[in-house]
Length: 255
Image (cartoon, rainbow, N blue to C red):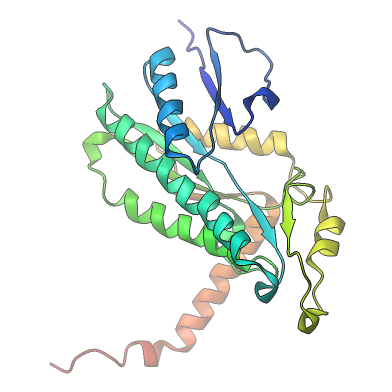
């Protein structure tokens, strides 16, 4: 018999969601604000009630904040971390509990991070910080689970895709700082909007293929720009650490 795909989509306003080839027997649309513990509990409860188990959780909730660090307001900085990191962490915690306790146990938690989780980018200091936090958190948790639980983790690091992320979804500093007249985050975002190399449909297909792999990688970039960026970062890292190898190896206790 063919395997039927079941889908649960979530959003703060689920009425905005619609997908082709879905019906009441294979699709559920739910309200989920990842900063709300009640929403998280309800989303998993309703999913289990309808479909009995959870095989894949995709953490894709995001908040885009752009501007030089000294221009950013505390309220925006905290929202960035609440959504991108603490919200993701809360969903991950519930997903792990469900996947560990269901029979048979197991599942995949797919964290959508960013190439910004591998390198720092001007105007995105707090966004990068949130993604680096997700990277370190997820890699660490992956070492904590027992093999028999069969819970796997995956960090998907997209490059630029032609979505609305750098358009109306982006939040900018409310007031400019005179010292940063050499940086214009809003102008740069507007110039980049819908000129990115990534095709969202192809990106979604890649993420699906990664999610159904028997032995999925912990970390992978998607997008040719992300691939080039991460390979350049690896080369820079290698050169830097080799350059200062003597200092690095000079601090051990003398036996």
